[in-house]
Length: 197
Image 1 (cartoon, rainbow, N blue to C red):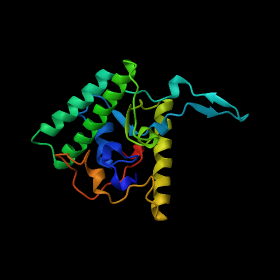
Image 2: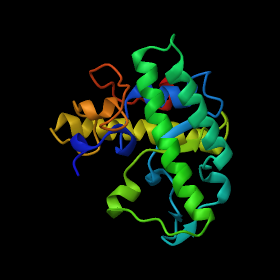
Image 3: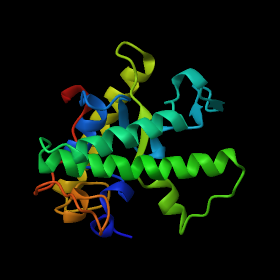
């Protein structure tokens, strides 16, 4: 399914306002990065060309069920706050939808219930919340480098007319789902490097 047809919670890319709310908004108790599963490699290539496992310390940590529940609650409170702007309410609803989906998947995993996806693409190409790394850590350096390369790649694709992997003028990226009550105001604001947040 092309990105133009995916709503924000299921897209590989997101609007800057969603990224910013998850990573820096003081109303979110649990700070997260909003990336896809692609950021979490299982192996790294050594100098000798052999695959070696990536250490647990260098992997990004997924929020626990309790943390995901807190993210969902914080997002709901932002949506219900009359002082929140349309952009804040739209971004909060997207984060709430992502947290709900992760809770469902994590809950099924803990209960050993198999998780069914419509396609492998659905499994790998949607936003996933991961705990924001602490400044100065290896993970922090990794997310700064990763996000810079990602933005460079999206700019490269966009300059050549490719939509894949790049933010396009899709209204779907402004809300969590087709039935969403809240939507961020257009146009889409492309995500930025974490160093710029």
